[in-house]
Image 1 (spheres, helix red, strand yellow):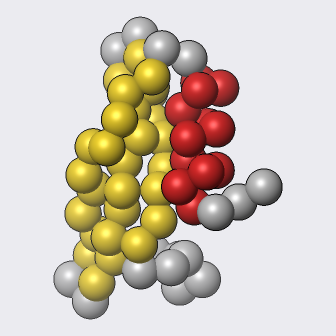
Image 2 (tube, helix red, strand yellow):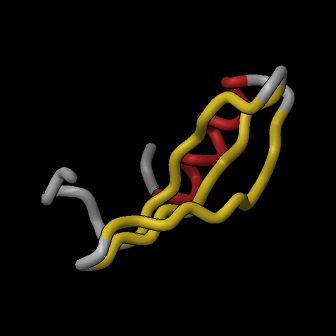
Length: 56
């Protein structure tokens, strides 16, 4: 596990033909992902992750 990642962040992964955005929460025992959205394209999912993480 990367120690430079925040305790909570968002990432996207392929899911069938779609892309899913997950909220990742890390703690001492590992990490847990919760689905927060599903998108038709990788670009839409990427934009949402950037927005949720506060990236530009």
